[in-house]
Amino acid sequence: MRLFIFSVLALFGGLYAYAAFDVFREEQRAQDPLAAAVSTGPPRHPEANLRYLRTSFARGEYSNELKPYLDRALTQAPSFYQSPFLLAAFYANRLEKPERIEQSFEAAIRRFPANGRLHLTFAEWLLTPRPTRPYRTYRETEGSLAASRESRALEHIATATRLEPDLDARTLELVARFRIPFEAWDDLIPREHRNVRLVLRVVDNTVRDTARRRVLLERFLSEATDIAALRSIVSYGDAWREPDIALEAARRWHAIALEQSPARDITLVTEKLAAHYLERGESDHAYKLVRMTLMQFESQDLSEPSADLLIEIAGLYSRYRRFATAESLFMEAATLAPHRTSVYLGLARTYRAIGELDAARRELARVIELDPSNEAARLLITQIE
Image (cartoon, rainbow, N blue to C red):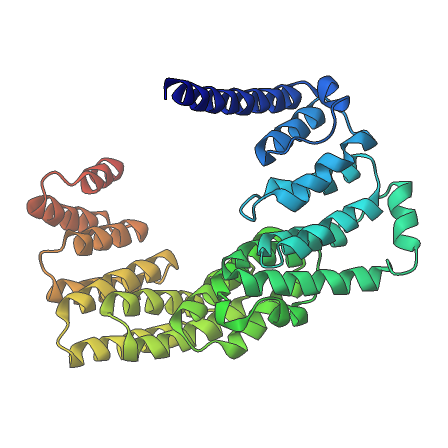
């Protein structure tokens, strides 16, 4: 019996020692490319194989002897690995062997067809021009014409976005960088995943052509039906100096906001739309807009939002040097909110701008009476004196 137990223990001990030695040998080969080069083949363990490849690349070794290791990385790496997908492509790229790069991408996609990031990376490689002779020769060969490459790239981009909708931002950056026409964007980015603000942000960072920007704004404006989209169009229309588009978007935003939005958002869009009117010298339109919005607030008995709107618009008129209207609006706000220091501070600044310093001091005294620690009022008093 003792002999049997001893034999079993010896057997398990031997197996353990062999396994430990095998792991040690694979790690040594991963750490020592020279030793691995004369070994019998790639390590069986995926991690050891990848460590060996990374170590070899780090030392600048790109010999053909690495091909079996790269093939194994593509066939045995789990789908959640990102870097193994492109190891073969990276290797071929350093050797300037575009045929092998394409084969490597295609092999990886066959292995992991549902990985959207892999499709997108392949599309980027297909679209990226390289001036070296191997690439020029490769791209001039049959089956590798520019039109064919772009068509294949667009197919992979569409597949990537369909598989992983969260790739919208990266996809948009890619299509903008390679100047893919806007007309093709619908096919590349499913409409249900499209975000107007995201598209405009990407275009703002990547496209400098004002004509292309204008076309995109006009297209979005023709389709926009919600406040979020219209608000983004107003913002980027202002930033890209497209005042007509921004004005129309602000008008539509204001009309929808009056029916759907809280008072604070209505005040915001009213101020933006009024600013556009004043910028164009259409102060009468701005004033009518304010009165229409105030009537909306009054019908709902919203005195605080009315005061907020009057204060904001009065300040806007003052900035555009429409001081008489600014004074009138500030005084109207004072009747609705007599304890708001911002009303009297706005009046003081308006009076100072037109040289009525005594009136400015009077309003500043009211501010100090309501808020003795008001730093803005004390600073303005010092400047007047």
